[in-house]
Length: 169
Image (cartoon, rainbow, N blue to C red; front, side, top):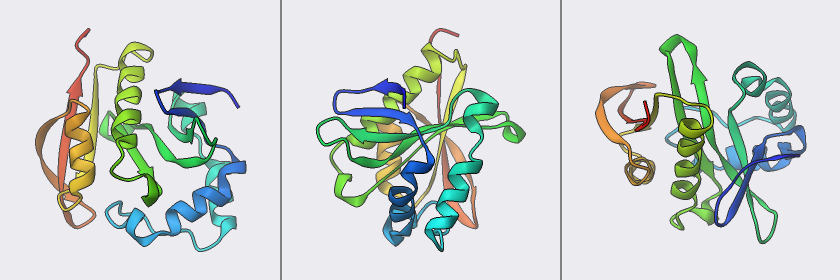
């Protein structure tokens, strides 16, 4: 599968059904999904179905991308952009296996996705959302150059909204 982005330590490529076992394992970790508002898949078949029906690439030409370790070629998690037309926004999001936490991977890949959004997709603005309690994600959003905009309701939890504007627009 074609690489969309490359960072110092990672490749980012489209998710595929072949990623289902890793995708299932990632979402099965209660700590990984704790602040996402998502529920774990109940079976590998749910992960397969999700990936088969994931249509952001077809609809918008971008989406969440698999993050692959350059050295080991292991699936580390995902990072990418998501279009939400009803909110008229594109957000950056990320989710990694715990063994990759606190090593800068989320920041490295989020910055690359933001740059792609501005330089390739010519987006005017990208947002980031996090539950207030998710200190790790908030750090990533700040390190990615985003500015705090305000609070919002994140699945009945306090949420923080960040954004960054394209300097070229």
